[in-house]
Length: 234
Image (cartoon, rainbow, N blue to C red; front, top):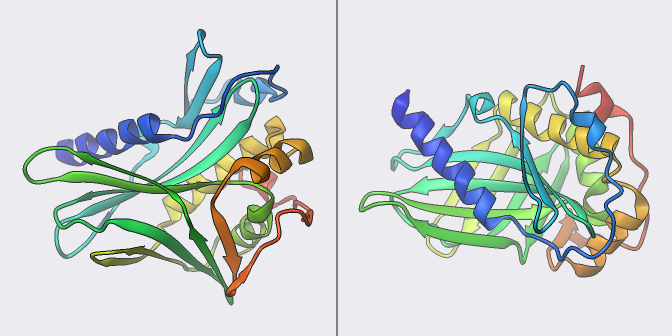
């Protein structure tokens, strides 16, 4: 258990360092009141940059996926809030023995297949045995349909494939992972992160390419949010 917590803490720390940060220019419109009284999130801030990080508390990471080669994978949803953009970022973190050299993500939800390419990636050497590799993407206009689908199928198997230059990682999200992803997104919705201007601005600056069933999603077509994210808090 101690080794597991240490590895998860390292992965979370890596996400904090790797998270995509936006320049601070204007006044944030995110409602921080949605975090009042919550014990399941950790909030850190930098008053000099005005940037705030919100992530599920480390103790809530009670699941990980272990591969046959000894590598261990966790999932980290995190909110990065600053004066210009409010972003929801989803990171896959793998403490690995054999390198993957991650390049893209595929997620199968129900009958739909979503792919994310040109993602953000990082790599850190931990020690002689392990390296921490991460791949992630931002939620934006292109991902609204993806998250709606995710919420509707939360009680079903959601399969993930991380493609790399050296190997492919196939796994299914645990119930704990799905709950963390949806609960964090529900807070993002309630705080105003999915307001149209914010998502449109993220679409304009973010390079990640999102495809649904092999067809690129047009971020300039506005998708409607559903109420399932509010139910994720219950």
